[in-house]
Length: 353
Length: 265
Image (cartoon, rainbow over all chains, first blue to last red; front, side, top):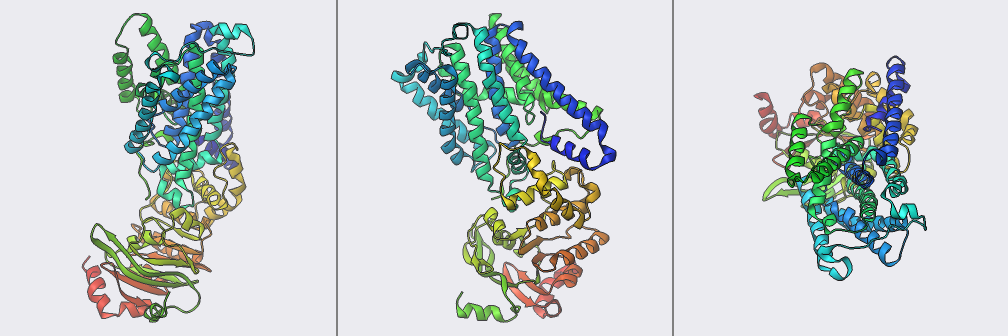
């Protein structure tokens, strides 16, 4: 599950016999091994670390994958993704509290809400790119923050929404224990990641990369660039919504923090740290940051931002492509394959209008 | 299109069906008039050159014709369909394809992937995010034909960013061809090329121009002379002269305004 280059590698192997077998098999095998390792890690995670932290890692990993879809593949830096993560968290929480929905359904309702919210926001934002896109998405997210904060009767305002049940069809182990909740939630996390992978390796994903690299040329080839951008924005918001809904329900309450701009910033930090345009990078970033924050918090240190910020700066300065991008490049060089270049220059929007 | 308009443009208007036509095309940029009431008629099957010194408005005119910028005034029709004010992607679907003066490719995609993308762009189906990108293989055959047509078969799986300049220009051409356009607009197809590449490109354009309407911009008079049936000379955003290459070349206004500049350039 690496960058879109994999189609190329497959194509090259299929058509030019001299360049083929070793690299092709090697790459394919590597990909399966990576996937297997990822799955095993996901399954043993709550055994090796505190289960609620494992759940946080899973939720943030899906959130970061959702953002990477937008940032890494469409070249759009959203600085308002807390609106979708947090918006879904509130809707999932409210439906669980008031309607007593089992958590997978509550989360899906939340995700649908996030997508419904993303549609108009996307339509209004994608006309801009680069820093303007970031600012417009931030502005919309701040509007949602304001509404949530003011509407105390519904959301609890600064106190958050308390007492969110994790209903799961009467299975008490899941409803009471974080350990089992993790396993009940994991299929949704993995399903979300699979969808992101499917999008990246679809005809749509190919167009997306084209609109990122050269929007003017994509339009000259007959592609309505804005439509593609709105679509990926909505998909990304839906996945962020699944992640946010699961996060809130696993905690049993929804905090105002979930719709705050710091949350938008954190997911960008995680994604860039891990390396954009690879999906795996987003997951690695989530593991690193969530564990780091948890360790710092339990040590009683109250300057978490200083540490995570410093780590971010160091990684960005030393490994321009993020942790995953740098590792992938090193592997590519060793095996003489073309590096996964997609991520380079992703977020500098230049438009053809 | 009024009768009077027809007559003014009729002077040197080519015979046959008009494929691409502009009337009174004007573009202002913050008070600066880059293109002034340009009339243009290109007959079906014709190869038409736009020439003029730098800043004459040739690229602006191209951008107007392909919807990348909107005209301040005037109309554009393609085979009788009004395309004024349409978006680039809509104009592409009307059968007008363009190349870019500065090579404009997707550096991370291979030539083959470029062409699959272009073919899919015309056929539709790019929104299918739930399908495997293997569905693009259906375009493989046609993509390979186009790659071969422009002589890039050996490089079909190399990222475009790694291609040499002349090869990138060839890929530009293949992309335009992939849209199977009724009208092809080529913005300086030989820009920055050495002599050998220029000759090869002339051959290529001649080959692909068969049965199509082509409008191109070029500074190289050898290219213009070898390819163009008709020439329109632009100067400071206005049409200075039009006609066959021979006629335009000997036009005293053109000699003083344009070729004069060319000789000491």
